[in-house]
Image (cartoon, rainbow, N blue to C red):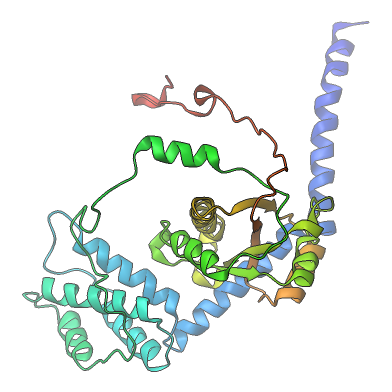
Length: 346
């Protein structure tokens, strides 16, 4: 056999793989419509976001721009004039959102405390935009506002004690993916406590583009936990379930569409750890990118077009006689790389 024929023969697997990739991509796009459904959800969220902006009451816009003021207040050195491009629109949005009862007590306190700090920091500014915004803000009253101060603070303020590294490592090792639970309900106050820890996780521009749907009705748990698949062997045993759902209406641009997954996953890890510290075990349930699963979930728990399920989390008191997978992780060296100057790895 000539070298030419040999070389062509060697390339057949590569050509087949490339063709399969193209065929699979086309089938995926027109069959499962995974990308089309994501596009629909993203633009549905953007539409809702801009509708809220047009009506002057989009809370995600308020949260993002209040956080931008926080970052300006934290700059070293801090400028006397900043936020000029958006301060007028922000004050208007805050006024409308507050008058319509769209700001929860914690958000209202954070907004008010940050704006107080902003207008004090820019008191010497001669910007007409800031002067007009200050005058409008002076007329505002917050009906329902948490008494706790939530504005900018110095690094370390309010942090008296911290758990040791050993404590955190022990907690991470103690968390297990438990699938077998005792037949007793978990008081909702413990779930709320865990969610309170979850929402302390970092979030891009502090938008918190997600919600935790807590399901503790046995029949509804079975209906929801059966949707993604992979739970057939133990779904009947689950006593509590949380659906973590991302909200794409938090964003004005499609470039931010993946933040719902980043932010909600960060929050979920805090939820898992907080449940563990209360003696309550958890198990993350993967959510498939499936049109049927998304449609069924939307129908059962009532989701909007711009909301996407990120994952489910089963929870409960662990069955003492039960077992869990060892789930050995990877060695540190296999997941960590130090990058030196010039992009070289070490």
